[in-house]
Image (tube, rainbow, N blue to C red; front, side, top):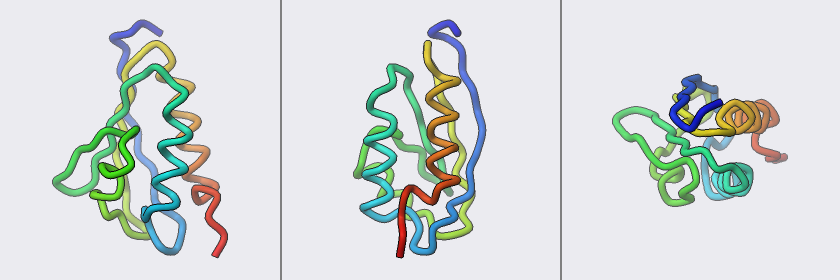
Length: 94
């Protein structure tokens, strides 16, 4: 993929307590290894997917649909990694 390639998709927050500090940390750890730029959008906010504070500001609850846009050379792999992490409930076990 070229640096200008952009992919959009969404995921549903499945963990019971939503995107609080621990799942947000898992997202940042997951995405920081990629070169692509990633934005997450929920409600009126759009934030950098590599920003812990930004992700927490979304305040996405269980059942929320978060829109994702990834742009860059490794966009496809980056997006799939995030979608897989969301499917695993961000490794949260309550």
